Length: 118
Image 1: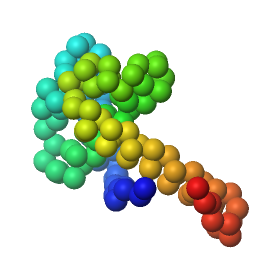
Image 2 (image 1 turned 120 degrees about the vertical axis):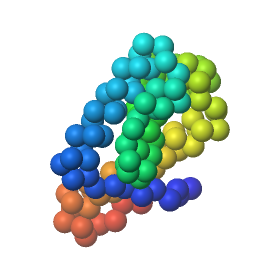
Image 3 (image 1 turned 135 degrees about the vertical axis):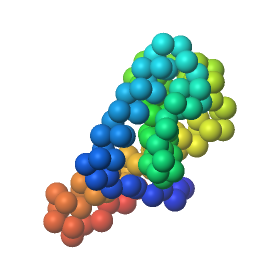
């Protein structure tokens, strides 16, 4: 299964905006605000950057709650107020991110001569 994932390279200003809003959303969630409500406060004009921020926060929350703390995906869905379909899609994207990153690191370490297969 391969998902179409586009990675965004940030310039310095976008990186500051990204970090600012990641922190704001995560802080709101930790204070009991549901995911979409927390994301409503992201006032970034660049739609692509806004979408990346929101997608990444969801992946971070899944990683911490499900993989880090052992909550079931159903419990994560309830806590965040996000549908299971959306949560599962984000989880799949996160797994694809991991595979892509591992391939890139493996190619760099091997000088690009040995492809990694799954």
